[in-house]
Structure formats: structure tokens, C-alpha cells
Amino acid sequence: MVHVRFEGRSYDIPETQLGVATGMSDSSVKERVAQHFDLSRDRLASYVVDRRPSGDLIIRPEAVYG
View 1 (tube, rainbow, N blue to C red):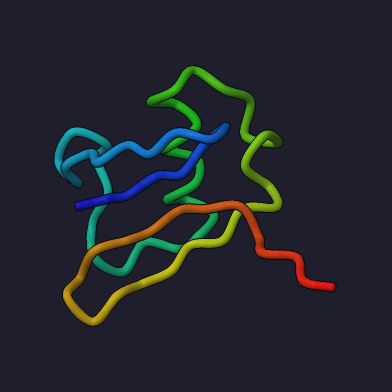
View 2: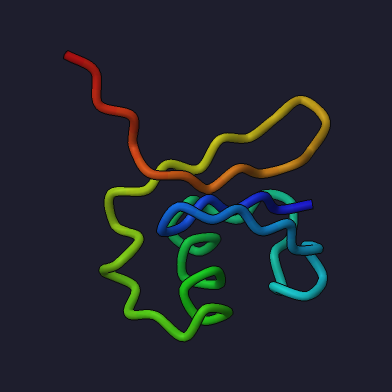
């Protein structure tokens, strides 16, 4: 499962729907997510791809503290 946090909303999207495969680079994963939401790739440039031990991916904005 790919969990996406984008513009204050959360989405759960199956990997097969995005065309995401094990071992894909962060850049490739973000590109597939951008295509799914019909966005420019640049909109997700600062986003982070967290790879969970379960195999799930979480795409989220970079956390800023301070």
C-alpha cells in the first residue's frame, strides 16, 4: 500500500494502481504519484518517501521542526 499525505488529505493507493514496484527509487515513486494526481513532478520534490518494514510506502511533506 502507498499512503500519500498531500495538501492536508490522506490517500491509500494500492501499488498496482500506481505501477510502483519493489526497489524503485524515491524519484520514480514520486513521479508515479505525481502522474496519479495529474501534478507536475516538481510539486512533490520536497516530499519524503518513507519505506516501512511492512513494505508500505508513505509519501509525505518533509517535516520541519523549530
